[in-house]
Amino acid sequence: MKGKIFSLILIFALTGSVAFAQGPAGSKTSFAILGGVNFQNLNGQHEDGSKLENDLLIGFHAGVNLQLPVAPEFYFQPGLMFSTKGAKNTMLSITGTYKLSYIELPLNFVYKALVGNGYFMLGFGPYVAYGISGKVIYESGSVEIETDIEFQNVVESGDPLTTVYMKPFDAGANLFFGYELSSGLFLQLNTQLGLININPEDNRIGADNNALLKNTGYGLSLGYRF
Image (cartoon, rainbow, N blue to C red; front, top):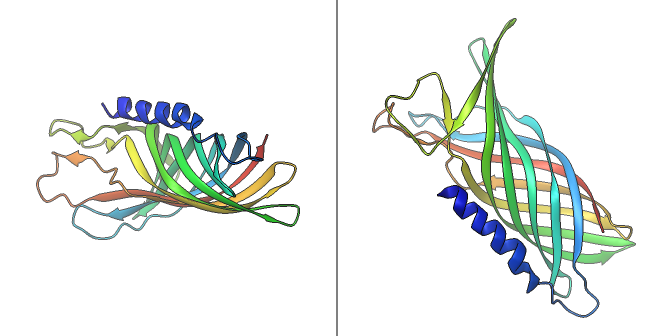
């Protein structure tokens, strides 16, 4: 069901954007490719309510977006991205690395002001994402164990205790700023705040499960606008 909702949002954003393309005179719709590095974390709390103490994980993102004029100096930028997220955690002598891969749909509104030979950019907006793969790597000394992360909304009492589960659907807020040259080359700094608890309902633990898990992070993108 969540996959169907995600598909409908994607179709609406990319096909419905034709109306936005009828912007002010002198503006035009443009297309960009971009990619870069992510510095991500999983913030939240344990089942008992204590704060998670995770470390940043370096990942990457790559994708495309459209830029659609809506008013002088203001644009709507729907996009489609592949993004890797996650975190690292060390407990006793064991380090766990949690890697998550998402297909992401950012829906940003961007202000662009002429500065020098290019444009200063300030953007914000929501995003929705869907997890397509994940794995966790446990390391202790020379021993390494790798296993898949399973995406599901509810973990049943009979599911394995050794498996890590997360919800597939994620959503949150984007904020970025950067500079675009007149040639179309641009650089931007991104921040992202996940607003949905991606920790599933876990019937193996019981009624006192207060676990909370949210994607947060920042990144740097380099792109080119045609």
